[in-house]
Length: 453
Image (cartoon, rainbow, N blue to C red):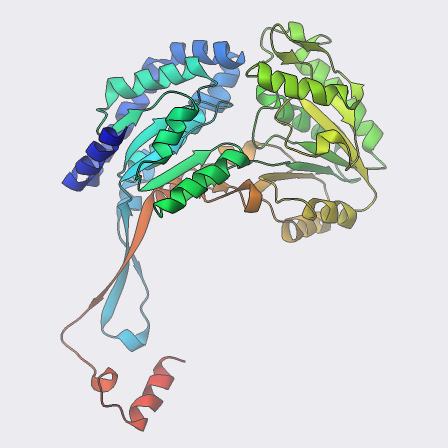
């Protein structure tokens, strides 16, 4: 790995990655590689997570292709220097911001969306002109193998390389002098990444997680709310960093909401979800056992069935309060606690008393309520009257805040994330005001104060 990083730094220094034509060609190669291996991608995600072909395209392949298209569409404009204003005190001069690549970038991806969360950042990394080492998760080996196949068939290792393996490989990678690190995963490992990066003063983006709340107030459309909450929660069997982690329902509509959520669980996966061939599985026994213990410690009001042989757990609704075991950490599974609140300020205060979440969802028809939640609760991003879909809009940045992460990406924001914004002021020679040169008179000071007020 040390030699690969060294060779990538040499390639970067050669200037090969700087041209628009080169970057455009590499993005097209990545797109063609994905299209060529779509069948293998579907098979791999079926094996790793039991994802259906529809869900695979919806949440993995389609999102990567959309990101590549966005990069190609806007690449020329994103690469152009941006001219900005210059204070009159510097007259005559012009100021521009240049976007330059960092160099060699490490992209560390998790197992829950193993294709999307490896290749969406890679598209932005390529567009910005960097070299990259992609580290897929060891927990999703079939998808990691396909990623490696796509990369090795289309790119030389001194430009883009794939590192497979477990913790030892992660440690080795984090010891290398990368110019930028992009990490998606849990908070514990995120802290380790930041600690390692600090030793080399390497800038980082951390896409983490947290307990993302879903507020449903008394004005909400309960039928639509239930349908969209259950859809968002059960994508990938709840193994989604922005999945609704728990529902805060107004006490006047809580029971009705629960009944509607039961209805849509049955509507989506039938009376016996574990027998539905397209219902995703938990990634491995370790995470299955963790979720099973939460079910056993909870007040289950619907679902709760489990199959250890297939690592599957039914969609499960749980009656909870803030002290419940399931409310201590991010769930990352198909378990949905439901809590009641009596007024919106009470709900907001309870959320603000806890670490800032990656996402927040609010179901309402109240303009005042929408304004209050948006302005008074800090969170990475979210939706009004929907779940999950904000991250599928390439025109808005996606990222966390506080304990849920730092930095953002998607669309044009990905280009910015993987670029250093270099500021350059160019001074003209035809006028050289003597005011700034010593010795300075009281009149000079008066003029300076006028110009810089």
